[in-house]
Length: 341
Image 1: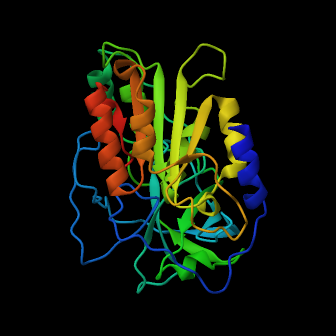
Image 2: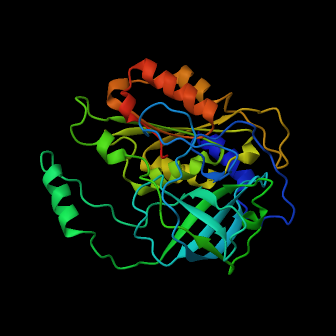
């Protein structure tokens, strides 16, 4: 794995400003839990349980409440230039408490451009409330409802986003530091990690976590890793284990390579998977690791302790469907297979 990381870093460590003209690679498949999606009036969206198998269209949530966000940086996120890494400064980051939560973003003051939906890639900037002990939840909910929402003090934060270039988001992927955008309130409940991986909901404790991402779906998975809410243990400590399967087309399309070593120090075994290893890379990278698709890698490796395992998924529809099917067939609890939308 160290050799693979070194090879990838050779082609991915430099941070480049995004070019003025975008070379776009578009997938024809529908994104299930994407980190970047465009809202379109031509599509219908269904609200469904996040823990049950369902079509991968989003329920868009409440109407946005807009505030201003300032661009701190915009850099190329991978050698191919197919995605960018954007940092936004917001006036209040306390609402972002759970990995997998998202915001809407649109041009500042522009009502003609449809907003994009972006999962926040950085670790949560707010503090989640402490979990309620079993047997006391109902009383706490009733007390909270009677008391009303607690006032909070706004705390500025910088959020990071991983944005795949498309035909109609150049206004965002080419944005410059110092410019502003309109940002909605934080939306969604994120990955329901606490309620499904901790406590006594299931008879078998969570001892192993599997993470699955394809393309820009790595954004909320990165947030989960760096949030430390997964409670994974450092290598050799005997605690909760974690494996990340991450699939992209070519080595040049893989962002966050420079973070792989850091994630492994946190206890995450990183398994990059390349679906088209024979495509030439402008960086000159030659792939010698796992090939195929994320679901193929899972099938090859299997799930060692399915009743004691949980999973987070974010990526294209085919991958999420296939992986979930394999996990359920292995014996993993359906409720421990988590999506962020």
